[in-house]
Structures are given as C-alpha cells and as structure tokens.
Image 1: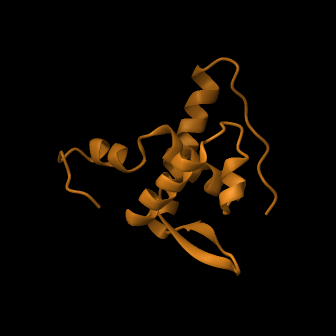
Image 2 (image 1 turned 30 degrees about the horizontal axis):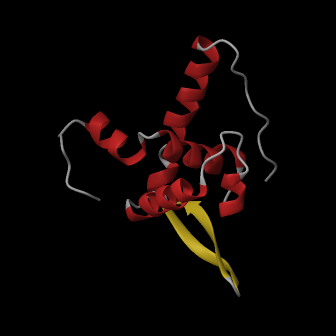
Length: 114
C-alpha cells in the first residue's frame, strides 16, 4: 500500500476503493459471485479492459483480492476477495440501501446464483 496522505480513515479507504471501478469490482464479487476477468467485463457499467486490468492489479497489491489460476494454457485467473476485501461487505450493502432510498430510478439487481 502506498504512503498515506492523511490519518483520516475515510480518506484512506477512498484511496483504496474510492474510484468508481474498484468499488464496482468489489460489488460484483460480493453480490454477484463474479470472479473472472470476463465476468467483470460483462457488467452493465461497461468497464474498459485497460482500466479493469489496472484496478484488479491495484486491489491485489492492496490486499483486497487474490488471484489464482484456473487455466494454464493460456494462463487465466480467478479473483477472490481476501478477508480484508470481505470486510467491505457492510459498506457495499449500506451504499445499496442508501441508493435505493435516495436515488430515484435505481432498483435492486437480481443476486447471482452460487
């Protein structure tokens, strides 16, 4: 993790997951059981491939996710939340709750089958 700019815990959390794409990747892992690169690319928000690769790398470097190969020729990876990443679940759930309450036109998406 990079040097902290602040001692404020909110500022430091935002440094880790405060951009749109990182938090949506975490959301997809937590709520929709997505774990593969292609899974994230097919999300409704349309993340560009270069940004997806960068955010997965940053999330891994910061200890929020880990990757493991599921195919060896060519090598392809699955991504899973670490305990540190799993601890974001309440934050994500509260953001969902807040959005449903305060942003007209939003609605719950069906939860992925596990």
